[in-house]
Image (tube, rainbow, N blue to C red):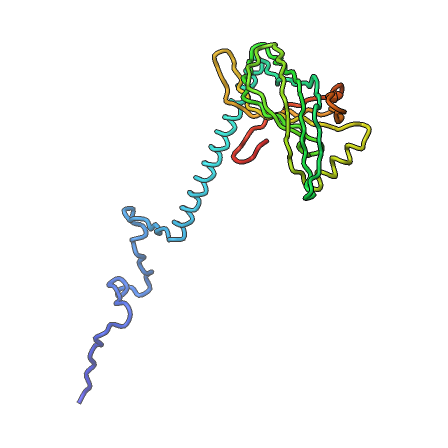
Length: 267
């Protein structure tokens, strides 16, 4: 009895084509899909990493552009301010007012110690000042001016005088009375005053003045700006009896400083 051979249900390998069966030595035929002109080319989709890098680069570019435009705008503002300031200076040639001490008389200077060992100071000073507006087109409007007389940071007397208007090329004479009644002094102030009273050179008095001033230019007005006037080089002495002691003001010089407030800082 002969055995029958049945073909396998699962094909083993690729079935030979008719050409291969006819000619076993012929070269295999390549797939034609690579030479198909209508074939859509393969383009890999961007991964999340590439999308993140693209967003990050775009964000950096926006920040750089914002910084560039901000710096450019600030530079333009400063340039315009400088041009406006130059035009204002050429047209008006502004100058600060000048102050000078004409005379200082000390009519009362009494330093007493009470039974409880506290020291009191009573003083009275007569001050005469002059201020000049050297501008030809600017007018200064002063608020009330506070005046303080100091001796090595020790307050001798205080006073004030009403505000006034200083016209162009005008000199204004100011008279003010400074006083202090039974002011209690600490130990350091007492020792400082007593050491200066023993000197022959006299008492080196400093005059401080603080006020606000408004500048008027034709029909324009500026905002009020604080100024401080410091006058040094004054040497006085204590009076003898009822005759006031006249201080020496030959070497007195006054300095004017603008006090501009930016936020909480004063310059």
